[in-house]
Length: 96
Image: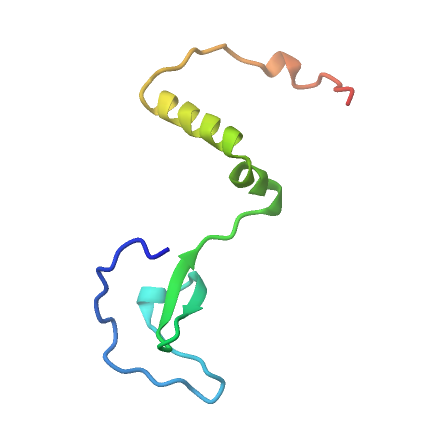
């Protein structure tokens, strides 16, 4: 779970306030974290990114995610075939 062990001290000592809050400074500014604690009481803050629920499916579907990753690699290396504009279909009614 821990990607690398190369930790360095950000603040030597911090003290929680009466509500258990810590001030970490700009290193943690405007980020979201998952908070983990081990049996020794050490706390690890793991940065996380929230994604919209409607986009969660790509992370849950390994086949679709793999296909997407392959497509992104192909596009970034110039392996693509331009199919032209699809604007002629913009007003097409879709039956579901």
